[in-house]
Each structure stands twice: as structure tokens, then as C-alpha cells.
Image (cartoon, rainbow, N blue to C red; front, side):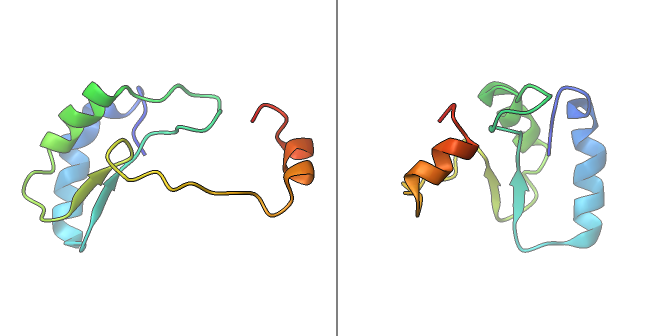
Length: 83
């Protein structure tokens, strides 16, 4: 997961990923509320460029967003009132 603190290490991470040779590379940044801010799409696109030697590279901003419905809306809103 990329955040401001590690975004400059994308080349090093890409080299480690080359050694592993995975089927798919997912480039993520936190989108849910948390202690760190997500990287903007432009920064993620620059990071993705470091992974151009891989066949399947997807980013959190490119992934399709599926519509989901909670099983119990009242209970979900109790736990996550800011939804």
C-alpha cells in the first residue's frame, strides 16, 4: 500500500516484485477513513509507471467499484455512522 511516506520507494518495491514474479500487481492507497491520507490518482499513476514490465497491474482507482448492500443496514449504521 502506497502512502506519502513510501511513495518514493516504488522503484525498489518494483524490483522486489520482479523477483517474486506474481500473476497480478495491485497498487493501492487507503481509501477508507484512517490515520494517513490517500495518494491522489496522479501520484498512483506515476507509481504504476514503475511497474510497466508486469502484465497485470491494477490500481485502486482503476478497479471497478461494485455496488454492495449491507445485510443489516441498521447494524451497519450503528457501527459506521458516517456512511
